[in-house]
Length: 356
Image 1 (cartoon, rainbow, N blue to C red):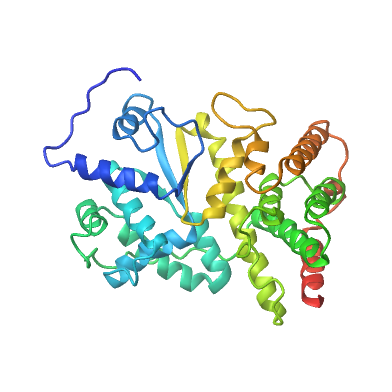
Image 2: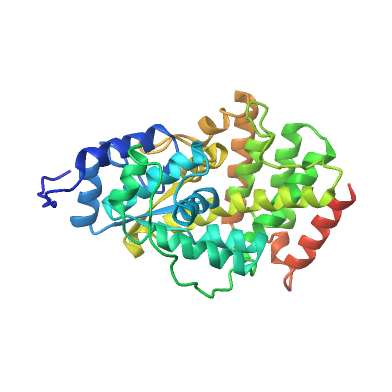
């Protein structure tokens, strides 16, 4: 990094920002969509350099759990409980406001609207805006445990947005997660299930890499995956459907984060995914792994070995990149059928889950 000079206000909370940044890194809640500087992702000097020298805006993409806790603190004036997601949310907002980093909550409020309707999402979004309008010292006081309550002002004006309409990206991820759930309920071997998902994607759908990685972790015998498809075998089959929809939202955070990260050069924005969900954080780092290790990223098989024995991880890696090459040739796939089969595939997938 070249030498440069940053002029800060005399009361800039440098030491506290460093402590909060170090705390966030220790919480394991962040995944950069770019190669982080050697001094550390949240190093203050590196962030100032990216902003003032490279002209890069750093944007934090937050999931629903974090966005809702930020809004709740603004609405109620105190955390309901100090659990792991709350700690991440409070420290993240304190750091973002101190360092003037943008927080992107859009997908989180699409998810809320999809579950509870536009009015609920608009109301919570207004409180999120109240939380995000600039009160760094107040957030720092809560993050540093000097304060247990906070007044962040009145609720922001309600934004009349139609957020409940299903996103095309979510629809496709939902189809893939419905298929993953079906393979799980069929009860085949873990390896046959994950390889079968790849065959189905190539022959009948599209190669949805984030959805496949989600399934690879879910089926992995070494992974703690019980909460990845909640209530899948519940007697109330609507609870099973809800669990699959939740999984589709997790996959959509991954796919949207990957899409945004690929726009860094054209938008001068670099993105960081923030989540207190361990599986989501683990999976986000796989988006940038190739067949072999590079100077910047490990090989995909190294990630797969966290969830699978080495021989099975190699088989999955090899088959996945065979499918990537297959797609690269432009050969016909099932998704190239005329018309738009998305609605029919969702209906069929839901019907299968309901009838199990």
